[in-house]
Length: 114
Length: 116
Image (cartoon, rainbow over all chains, first blue to last red; front, side):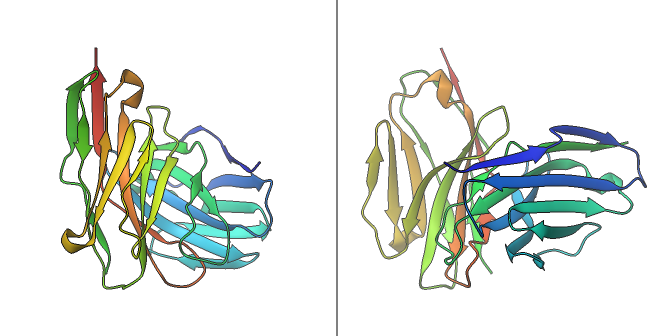
């Protein structure tokens, strides 16, 4: 069966510090991978998605970047965090090939910026 | 642009009551896909159901049922005989028929509180 791992679960960072959140998927090959952010009391906003190694699509302009160095690894990064980067970050995967595939989510990372 | 509206921000019911969560969507795509997810207090999103735009048949899974009405652009979710374990935030989402990635547009969610 497929599993998705996300870490860390919780992170407190000062403004201006760098960020690296990691997500890995097991049990499937060439998945589509996604990063979402959920602000407090809000819905989920798609930040990035990837359909293959090195292929990253950005949905919203922001202070963040994403990379996919390996087939089942997806990394969310920032060089200098802003207060507005606080939120709950969720990684997800889906089978490739069609937009009708449901996405399966990790447990999320709660990021607080001080 | 796609849009999903969940007008009910929060609903409180007593256990064993039936409850319906509303979802209204907007899209220009003729083929699209609708989803419901559950987010328990622990935070992860759990996939519940997917519905294709060309299949308006309603679906029942145990205490859960979904009513898809294309004429009113609605995809409502009913929980029958609610239980405390149903307490969570429920999200409705929409994906267009474009490309190879399912880019989901989420509603803002409905928080369901089931009490004894």
